[in-house]
Image (cartoon, rainbow, N blue to C red):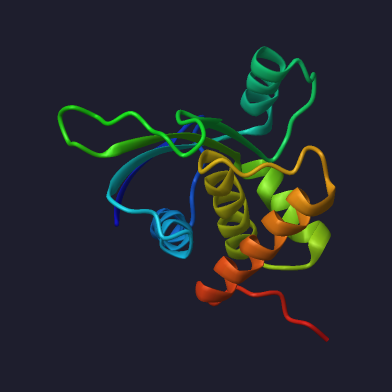
Length: 159
């Protein structure tokens, strides 16, 4: 399991030192936790709230900003391969850095944890998980997110 994570930062956003490495680690930790076999490629784009709002409106018909958008390229665990690299193309992740900062403050944890959470959350979507219907699907996804964040040393501190 080896993921090539392409990270693009838009709109003059200044990522803190280590953020790119954290995103790559979160992608690889998710693939490892899910026992994903083979090489893969993921594109991650960091944007501001205005840009993610435009994308949310265009692709989901929601006229509001959001924290993260996932664009899976596979279906039912089947992914196309990049003929040049023979790696599975998993899809695209778009993270609003502004939204991540606000949520980190809101939830009282580090920006590092929030960015890792959003990356893991979106990676699970790329791998076919969903939480739209709530219930067991949502609980399963949440358990996996927390287990992966714990592997990254970013578990929620329970009081």
